[in-house]
Length: 547
Ligand code: G16
Image (cartoon, rainbow, N blue to C red):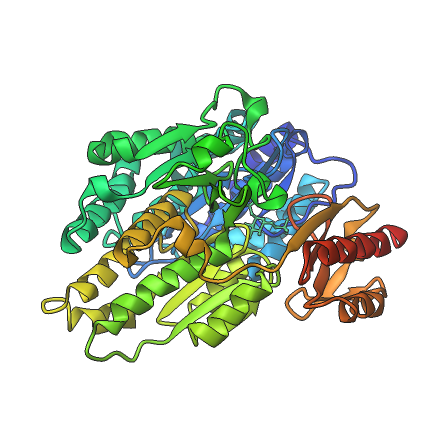
């Protein structure tokens, strides 16, 4: 395929013209903004995905499948976004992000073609005329169908000669990641939703059987699905696994009301406000043998929690706590083996509570790595370990198991049920990206195998009081960070933050621009809630004075 479809691209470019002075940028999780501004970006992203597919050849020199996910995840209902998923199910490599930014900021077709054409021709010449391959999906946002149709418009004009594609319509983000990988690697799974559900339920049921756990003894879970796509998919999953149905109650599942998405519910609301979402009251949350869990709008984040009736207190089990629970399970199973030389590491971000990092280093005696915010950064670090456990405090995360892990564990699988359980965890825990449903199943299994309840889990260590504030500034790009986002380079206020921190017991605070919202985030943590609030207020004031 050496031809470049210039006329078709020009025609569609002009149908969805960019604004006069575009200033889009591929952020923490792709492009994200008010949905009304996204039309031209969708076209650019679809073109980049085609070129990316042409550039990623399999052993037969055929273009590998690339995913496009239309979602704005935790953002408010009026926003939307789009990101590209690579053949292995991970994020678009960071060295392609400038291209995405550059293309989306072309205000004329001439400029656009001058960038894309050489790449298209260069990569397509290696493919022996095989078309690019794409999969596409969206979450339940009201603007999703229109944005998806922009891609379909382009794809239908190019189909068969230049591209093949499959539109999955509604999926969770992790489902699309799983499906993209399965298209490229049949040993990973069957590239359908049913394939995904079966992979999860088969591994879960087998783990339970191996460990003599009766389904009825599992903790009951109330799931807040943020009125997002995770609700529909949890229902579908439970239809394919009826034996699990009675263990789950679903709230905030109204995907028919687009304005309800993430509003007073969902993982981001619960984590940021440290309180119960709408739909779950303290009575439900304090039921014995019940765990509450919140997904976010596209079901790639999970936080758990319960209400401690005795102390009248909301107890959050966030990404840090989930990472530590899964580490405990993995360490416990590994301890049953006669030997192993697997390298285990835990990857966090600056948002990780200081108490969790201390626990990892001092009690678990595992290496703790601090990465920049964004799944792509953590995922990359986790790949350096045989078992790389990565979680952001906000509930994004997974555990990556290496090929060496599988080879080592297979030596023991016939004699040790713990080796078999570990191998099955690799199927249960989504290997492509954080996945609220898969992580929740892993949490439930961990509690059961470790024979602990949510209360005991929460007592593993005690979080230092912490606060995450959002400050709306004139230009968030003024805020430049270094040291895994723990220090500000610009504006010059770091020394003032340092002074405030030094004068706060167990104080820690940092400022960074959000990559998904038009705001700057201020994190503060201290020995007491009062000191934490004071530190947060003072750092917020510094930021406000400078914007
Ligand atoms: C996205 C990213 C996460 C990140 C979050 C907040 O989450 O995938 O890695 O933690 O944004 O990022 P920021 O602080 O830069 O706005 P989601 O769930 O919105 O896709």
